[in-house]
Image (cartoon, rainbow, N blue to C red; front, top):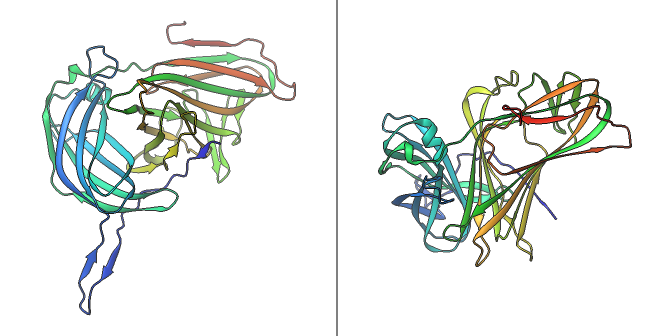
Length: 357
């Protein structure tokens, strides 16, 4: 059964207790960041370009449980380059967690030299049990020198679905990607994706039941609104999200603002067949950075990852959907359309990229 993603805003809070009869406060920390960091570039697909800049962070765990670590990478001019998060179960003793920054972020940023890891925060717990700050690293960590040209390049793109008709259709868009296993772990960075991934003009309305979208000749009601991630050949699956906050304008101006919200899912454990699945139906419109990561099953060298979005599409005449795939990973894309109650028909449909393929 798919485990539901229960997102939680990471509140800045910590546990404390009074000591003796004075006014002193003893801060209870289930773990402490030591600050012994190491960095390295990782070429996941063997093409000669680094897909990740990884920073390993050492910590001393006093209380076993689930921990989340996040931090930000800055260039030599104090400009933010990227964000990363790690989430895992830890036992008491010395441990390491890894922050993996997307190589395409560094390449697109265009800065070379030493980078700085800042705002390093360690959280204890998960979105189901509640999360508190375990520790924060006050000092910065400076990486080795890197040239932005040694990192992988991403290519923005758009695709178009057009047609005409009247009726209801269940539309599912899925992406399948094979990920390499590096040191027993897998990860995927998705940077700057638009939710919904639509460039056509549209309006949005939302409630506690989900978000609905209206376009010329078509509409997408609030249900279903399922976003599902499934990974096979794994021990677990984690998803972290970062979203820019602001006022929703239209598809060319989504969530402009100066505040950022961060969520982390609970950890989805794999079943006996090595399949871990997590689903959410309440992801709000906006621009997101997504981190998908976890531990591979023993002796696995590749992970099969599938991401899918399911929406109902109500057509009332000619329609033209321009799908914004900026930030989405390369892989096998699949679009399926199923008529509901026999009430839907396409006169024509085109699914092509900007070059007309």
